[in-house]
Length: 215
Image 1 (tube, helix red, strand yellow):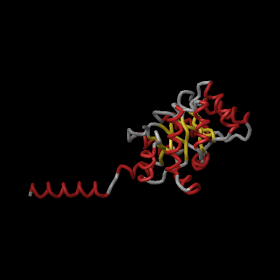
Image 2 (cartoon, rainbow, N blue to C red):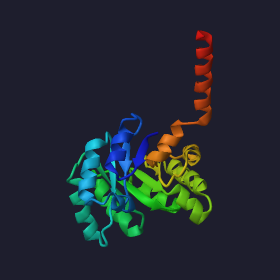
Image 3 (tube, rainbow, N blue to C red):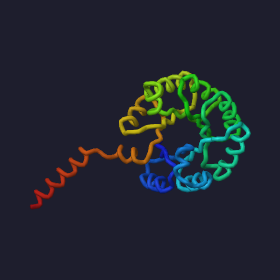
Image 4 (cartoon, one colour):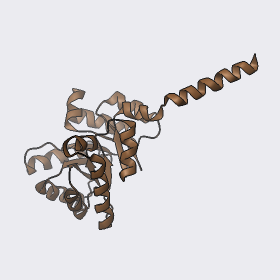
């Protein structure tokens, strides 16, 4: 299981990779817009920082526009950049072409096990459900992850789940327990996962005990 940073901020990426347990970066159009720089510049900088794959989501309106956009972004760092392609029947066909050409592809905005089945058929490397958003819109994002994993296992597919839209440490571990192969998290959630007030309390108690014994 790998942990990804869900961010388009270069400074967050630098900080995340000093932690030594972050494996790659996922971005999306909303995150890239917040960075207030040209998309190409941000993706290139992230690819120079990350030790693993940096995923860029296609936004072109037509298939040809998506092809041109993909070629342009991948050329920035061919060994480091992967594509996120929103799920639709048309986009799955496009994704199949990229996969055959050796491009790392993730099918994103996945909301049903049926979509996962088709992603498995084209050999997509990953599928990305939006866990928290699915809970808000469908009622149970964790149940969706479980259903997705059931389909993948039933197909005997190598496709893996990289779960996104995770808003808390609790939701993170629940998503992993539900069957996600990998998680992508905002930096603040990553930090929250490593901290606990009882851990701090224990350290304080040991420190006081040590100081008392030395006195």
